[in-house]
Length: 423
Ligand code: AMP
Ligand code: GLY
Image (cartoon, rainbow, N blue to C red; front, side, top):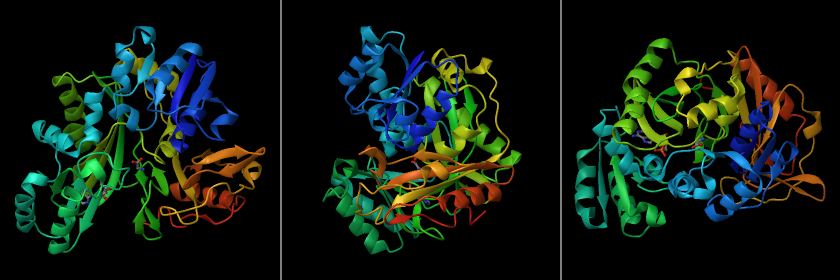
């Protein structure tokens, strides 16, 4: 069949890479894609939120399956658009309905869902412009650090963690009154701070059953030792070495199953990924966020460890037969290291020529922000390449990635040399 992947990052290159291995797939299209996806698929220049253009592309190319990479089209209702269109009848779109995607699109909605279904998470209250005074009083009842979250999508930047009470009150005001994160912060969720170690669990659900995919841990800060500004992710490891059977059982019993059952109870149409961000406090898991898509760069370590044909997996998701399928995993560990443009996550230059791609052996190079110019691969984003390796030991996998990175270069290339340092 012909398959379309929406998005342009390392996550989408990893989807294309995996789908290209399936003998069920004839042609792969990626919209808009990057220089990496162009090598294994046909890139189509269109915006992931232009549903009309996507519909035309699906029809013109006889596409039978659509994988949605990023959250924006999901939160804006691409799944509902597909369900409502007669011309798209039977096209297998992998991604939740708008109602399901609100678990990522609204932090308040996610908290209400967790409260409703008794899923462990930090205590909270939410406030608007009208309740600013109450919000400041609520902050006084908490202990530092203070966690403020813009309710809406803010490109991963909408969470502030502050040590000082007066600063927290000021930032609450900046968010609610001065639109610090635009519309996204017209409502703010204030949360209890959870002190622990983070990990992510990925679930694929068909709305009835689910498969738990490999766990992963990402490294969000730009600086070594986890300091400095937040990024989209500087590297990732899968599986998370400290997750044992006991912890995984708690996560499944208290979080995964109640989440899937909660969606079912509320009759929410959900055929897609649930990416659950967790903090382990002592030995107990708590949810810090839901995402309704795969992570990036987590996908670049999770997918290479899935042996089951991805097209089969998605077809079973669409036809609600996931329970009938066996999920087969590669027991090895995967590590990825992200090469970024100098200056990222602040200002950076694009268009730098990338050297050495052909010399990489033993690692998979997923393109994150690249394009082709004058028949050369050049940088086209803050995050540029994700170098993934597999080995029986995660330390060896990391080592392999670093060895291959030695062969790659572009002007002002930057990366963290300490991925996995804390494990
Ligand atoms: P989120 O966008 O909700 O994942 O938040 C971004 C980051 O803020 C998370 O990855 C955590 O590192 C941190 N964080 C969010 N909520 C909490 C919390 N309640 N306690 C401690 N850290 C948090
Ligand atoms: N790496 C974090 C995310 O994709 O949200």
